[in-house]
Every structure is written in C-alpha cells, then in structure tokens.
Image 1 (spheres, rainbow over the protein chains, first blue to last red):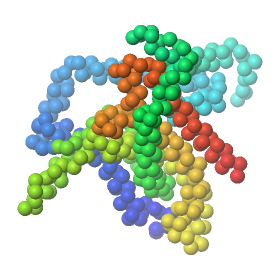
Image 2 (cartoon, rainbow over the protein chains, first blue to last red):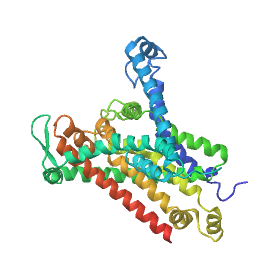
Image 3 (spheres, chains in turn cyan, brown):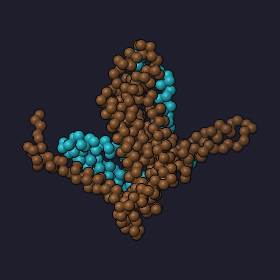
Image 4 (cartoon, rainbow over the protein chains, first blue to last red):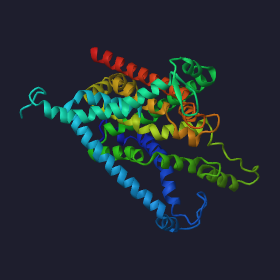
Length: 106
Length: 292
C-alpha cells in the first residue's frame, strides 16, 4: 500500500531522482564508455578496443605512479588513523571542533 | 569500565595527547601563522620577504579589481549553493522516506561520484561540454537530420561562467544532500503526517513544516556547500574562461607566476575571514534554534 510518506513511489520525485542521477553519472559513464573506443576522439565511436588499456600497462611511468599513489594513500591512512585515535582518547570535544573546522574549510 | 582522570595517569595522557597537539601546531597552525605574517610584509628580493607590518596588501586586495573577483566568486558560490539546494532537497527527501535497501542504494549513489577523483570528474564534464563534446555532437547530429537548416553553430558550453557553475554544482551536490538527509532523518514524522492529515498539501507541508523544522540542518548544508565552492580552484581553472576566474585562481597566480607571496597571503586570509564569518553565522543560528 502507498502511504502518504512514500515519496519514492511518486512519479515527480522519481523523475527528479532520474534527472539528478543522469547529471551525476552520464559524464562518468561517457568517460568509461569512450575508454574502450578505438579512436583518439571522444565523440566518434569507432568500435570496441582495449588498446588504451594496453597502452596504460605498457607505460612503466604510469604503473610506477599508480604504485606511488597506493603507497602514499596507505601510509597517510595509517598515520591519520593513529593520530585521530590518539586525539579521540585525549580530548574528544576539542578534536571534534578542529575536525569540523578542517572539514569545512578544506 | 572505569574512567581514568588525567591526574591519575599523566604519563599515558601525555603520550597519547602530545603527538596530535604537536602535529596540529607544527603542521597546521605554524605554517598558517607564517602565511598570516607574510600578509603584513612586502617583497624585498625575489625570495626575501620583509615583515613590515603594513596593511598595504590588504588595501590592494580591496581595490575594485580584486573586490570584483571576490564578489563574483561569492556570487558563483551562492548560485551553486542555491542550485545544489534545489536539486538536493527532493533527493534528500526521497532518501529519508525510502525503505532500508533503497536508502542505502541512494546514499551510495550520491557518495560514489564524490569518491571519484575531482580531476577525473572535471575532465568527464569537459568531455561532455566541449565545443566538439558529446552535447554539441549530439545536437549537431540532430540538426543534420532536418533539411534546409543553416549550418550548426555549436553552443558555447565551456570556458564561460555557465560551465563553472555547472562544474561547481556537479562537484558539491553531495555536500548539500548529506547534511539535508541527516536533518530530515531526525525529523518527527508524526508532525508531517499531522500536517498532511489536517489538509495541507505536500508542498505546503514541505514549506511550512519540514523546512522550518530542518532549518539548522539546512543552514549547515548551505555553509558546508558554500565554503568549498567559494574557494574552488580546479573547476574554474579547467572549465572557466578568462572571464570566469574565481578568487582561488587569483591567489594561485600571486603565489606562483606573480611571485608575490605577501599579496597572495593577504588575499588568502581575506577568504579565510569570510569563511570564519560564515561559520560564525552558522553557530549563531544554531544557538538561536537551540534556545527556542
């Protein structure tokens, strides 16, 4: 049964969600689809190909950079985990305020 | 569990509490203080900055040229916030009143682009908006079907103010939806049901019951969207043209190509003071709401 607060079941809201979803996802989807395109151009579909992915893994610098990103991301996650748990134990309220400020101004 | 007071185990508390405090001072407050001091200085040589205590940099930052860019940035950020609110409020409502599975799915759907690299998202938008991008290519193809039309003129969708606002809304939408959802989720549903029972329509209920009750959450959504939008750098840099620069682009230019760190510092701190003012307004509003 449709209750008065089942907003998700109403078509105007569904249409709205579909519009926002299209706005958020179509650009990313286009990028993904055209990464399989057998052409340099992003507007003309020239057939399916994995050639850009092959080039990606052939490029030693790119693979090395990806490795660097992984290492740095892991290291900063671990360091911030240690720091935030230490801060939480010592001064919960103060840190919450600082985190809020940092989050808001980033 | 027994809680320990700091006086009972000073060593433990020092060991746990000191690193974050040192970190905060050495890596956040101290560099910020240096830049703040620079904002009262002037360039002596290419690398040497003398702190002279003059207000000259701030006076220059408030000249019409820079003030206009600052005001324009605030306009962009305000428009972005408004559009995010209009787009995001129905989404937040839908998430709030969705079933458990749908709620989780929608929240992930809102967060997922947020976890994608900003640079990649901006280039994705460029691929769509470019003169030879997908929108113009699609419109051009449709145009070609109809016989007897003049040659297709691509729409100017990129390197202008329009593209910057689209990009800012694209990037900042989750900043708005999540606080709105958090506020709406705490709402007492019986009040909404009562309003609907007593004859108010859905829009009247939304405007006269939901929005006033969720006002603190709406304000924090507005602030949390407005502040990063005001300081946005990458979006206007990549999507904007020469006339759609925002304040962050001007600041970047001072620090890099113009090599005028004191002036860049003054501009940065003007932006920071605006941020603090926005946070102060939020604090005042939430305090007034709490007092009621």
